[in-house]
Image 1 (spheres, rainbow, N blue to C red):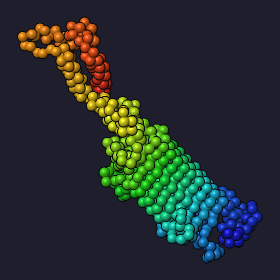
Image 2: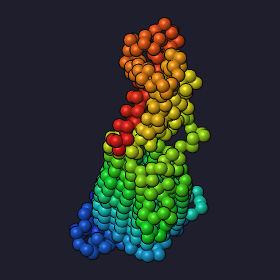
Image 3: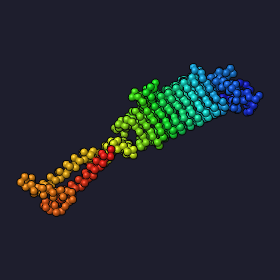
Image 4: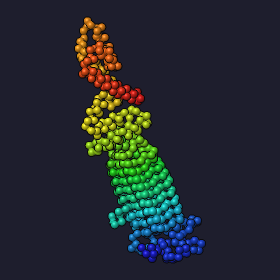
Length: 469
């Protein structure tokens, strides 16, 4: 767009000596364009400045050619606060604030933008409030983006509240340094928050995303909330797929305070996420969540029993599911919650055996049968006593002993020898039972002692796990 077309009021800037861009500010008998207007001190000067901005973004200027479609306010340093509080005001032209610097607060309330609004690569030095605005992005060649904050930097707070965004929302590679609120908004189409850096508290509470959302590779350094309160107007937050893959979390919480409020309605991807401090899922349907390649150590899930649905067990490899359950087990061991650790140990082994070679499967089945994978103390004692009793009876059979009521003393002596054989492999007892030359009996005794030793160890492990809880 030429300088002549961009000119709104005739004149020359006493500082840059060029045709005036957009308008002028008079100060100390000099005339400045907006780009070079110094900091204004009087209320009258500030009001004139703000009124000029209002005329610029609305196209309300007698000198603005009617055929101008875009209002291009790029590369300007805005030295004064910008405050437009017009409930129901309609802005029918698209606005470009590319590479601008806003030195003071920006407040936009109650405005309806029919076309694209872009603040790309701009810097906001003070607080920004955008409240109760509508971004329509009507159906034309400019409607691919409804509002664009890509590459922006907010050095103070951003309050983006109760807005309706009807087309694509782009918020990529944005830096926000102070406490901010992106709350109670309605995003009707796709929203992109990829590569953002949130360095302080950020709250997305009560917002609703109707289409897919991406937060890929963003970092959340301060407390972050994605929450729906019990009395929230909205019943859902993410209605379709949301992707947090490759993000960095320090203290992030997803929470629903009511059973009829749902955070995730579509798939939620938390793959390859770096959880430095904690990630909390409170009353959230975890069946929608994928935590592939994400360490579970710092993740807390209130309804953890539903976590078994995290993966589609028929579609994903059992090794991935087993690794997930192993991480959960280790997480609860580190926390000292051995009861929960035991539950995930069982699940881990169930899926781990599916990944082993065929010749390893029998050992897993024996492990499960003998002690419930080291978690069932009662089962392990029963198995130990069963093996012990069968061993005694088998040795009696090898020694051709029969129970004789009249030979009780002989029976007691034989029983004592049998115990010595099983417990200590006593050679004198083996000779006394007449088994010293019976090769198969000796093999059986050796095998039995090994089996009983292993079962005793499993029984001790299961009892330790039980009493540790």
